[in-house]
Image (cartoon, rainbow, N blue to C red):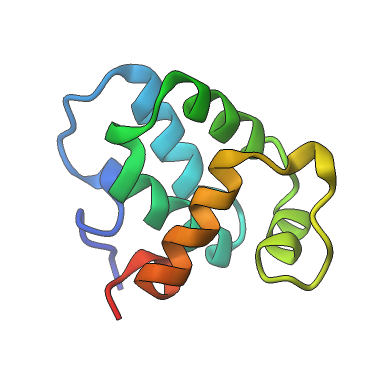
Length: 105
């Protein structure tokens, strides 16, 4: 089954800045489908509204190992202080408000 361009932005023509396209690609190609949905869903909805500081934090989050990031986001492990930042909390709040993977409840 193929993904639509609505759930995976790299499948549609996109006129964004190359940096934003790279971030979107990295959010959707994590290695764990769960992380693709958590980060990709958030990025699809919010990337055009993120500040420079938030983009830097997102790029930093993308360096974390999937298993660690997933465990932190699901509450299975406590989030280390070095990874805690305003954007991380924004991602969590986004998913709490919008449902799994950023899709409306």
